Image 1 (tube, rainbow, N blue to C red):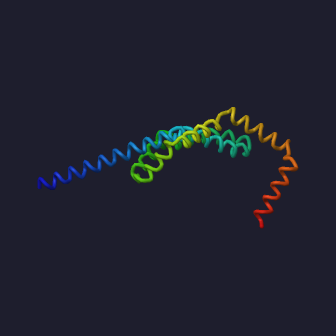
Image 2 (cartoon, one colour):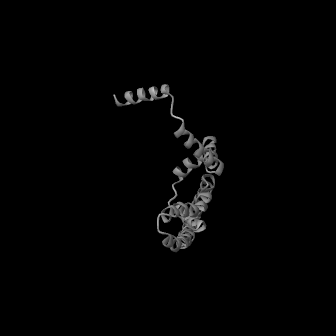
Image 3 (tube, one colour):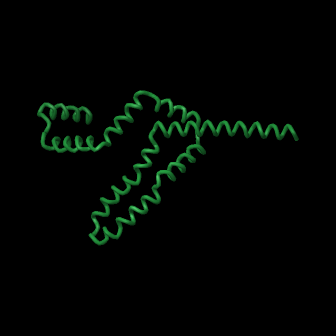
Length: 159
């Protein structure tokens, strides 16, 4: 009886340590990947996407649906609730080897630089630069030399 109880306690202790390790690795992975920041931006993205769809409706329906859509996105896309659900899912389905690989990649300089570039690309200044580039791209056709190079590339790909 004492041996069985001791064995159960040791097994439970091992499971708790494994779960603590899973929780720690999931928390670190979420921190490195910026999961909380992504989830906090989700309601704004949903509102932006639905605003485009609602803008196509008649004026009266727009006034009717806009407050409802905002309320739904705030209620169902609550960042804290999503974070807890996502965290619980990852802890429950944790795979130590995959998590270790992910964490090793996220800690590299290349991944940190990539995240900084992605963050910088989402600033209003970056959006303005991208819009100017797109406008200039349409107004500034490629040189004949570049067109010839691209045509040769297309020919080689098709042969």
